[in-house]
Image 1: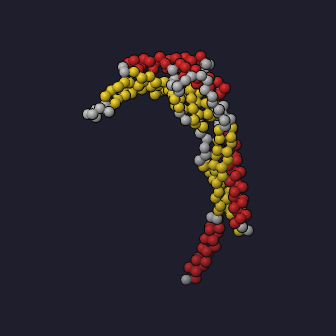
Image 2: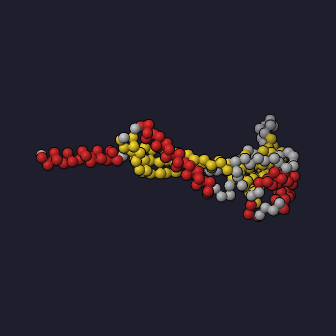
Image 3: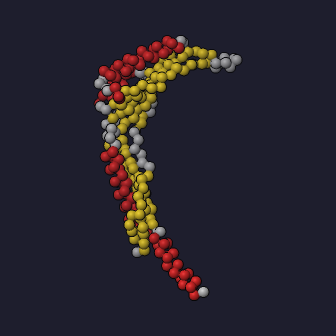
Length: 228
């Protein structure tokens, strides 16, 4: 019985020490960097419509070839020009009394993805592509060719923000801030800045304002804490 009493008495300090070591403060922080973009990613659409499928495809091919030639003549390297999404859709009219779809024509479509590394030429290139047959802007986004330095700075600012929050909360709660126990990265926003799609009806240089993009990072810090 004496042995059992001593064993129980020895476990109490151990449990108290474990509870003390588990006292912690977890905080999150964010950091942002605003910077002017240096590249644009442009997605142009070329469409042609006709009652005959072969004619629609032929017209689309001619317009696509003209757009690609224009982009090449603008000095864009081949690796920055890519075609995709070649398709032919049947157009049908379901307004007949029997409810059966009546084929009214065919729509041939193609997509051209372009990376522009000289933003000053963006408006002219869009206008020229429209003149040559591109009739839909499916997407335009601005980005950085190398996001690494700006993303690292956003991470530094996130850690600074989280550490300041931890110090404030510890002071307000009347506890001491101990060692940093863990640091983990949370979701940030570092994707390109998109613009909405639009259809073109006329040509000419299209005014485009790149503005700035925001690169953000988030972190979570856990500190050990003790009593004041």
